[in-house]
Length: 464
Image (cartoon, rainbow, N blue to C red; front, side, top):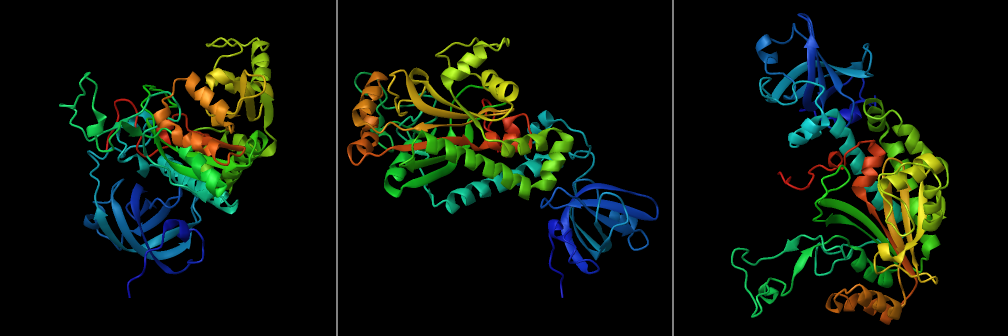
């Protein structure tokens, strides 16, 4: 009877010690002498390689010759406690089948020590490395934690559209969606593109946010969250920007700004703790190889309450700090990452929630304060990252929202449905957005956002 395959992560559980096992995976290294060979095998289920011990009395050179770094194997043998350092168990091979070879002369990962920049050039193979295996296992666990957190709190998962006719951010940096022939666009009499001939009968784009549609769900179901891809045609070729990224956006009826801050803090602490509890080996590897303060920083987020202060108070601290900033600070400016990180890393030395921003630098839908100058915005600022969550209490007053829309010149033809939520049974409600890649960036300690998404989309880069 054929032996069923056991994942390598399950081999290390110890329950199968002394038994015949079947393991499959890719060769990370092969070393040894004329009597015995040692193969490090990994199947992606764990950061830890499984050592395969090959007694050369049982195998011919012809059988072992194809086994090089990157080749794939099926190994059957006895699982025993290992006498060597660095591993608890090993397999004494009885049978080896080579599934696929990886010729040493052209396999890009044959040698160790490749830079992350080089890895981005071979994105189709980089997930086979220890580093990216760790990153994407952590990414999986964080995604699962997000769904578990909101499900356990009674939120409903709402699928908001990827194709939209509204610009939630008002920035206009959207990817257009069309079925029109771009080489022969239909025109109106005044020479403009005639979108009535397009598939949807109007101009449409890929979404930059599911928030506006999410508010429809919140004012019907009470509390919802979205978790899906969003798109931004912003020409920012930086380590913090992607053209395609994932967003988590909860929206809650009957939540004010304080409820919103409480939820955001609870949520992000939950995700960090979940990662520490479920990704211990991967986080320890990244702490050792890339950032030896990673575990300390993650535990630091859990240890203390987040600081809460107003934008005005934050500006005063920055102005009086004596620090030299690339971008000057004064009341009314949109804070840059350097300002946010100064507050978090130098002044308070813990995460900060900044509230009550000037209305001129925030989106039209944020609730206006009585001072007429600020809105009930809230940004959660993290070490290494800067802003990781942005949100607000939403404007629930029909007239105030309508006036703000008119002030900014937002076309009413795109907003009538959104205004109806304030016209029929309006309620206080709040929400926020978390860029998933920024969370993964923080939890893994990686320095470039392109290294925490499997297939990064950036200016001039759209492979696969």
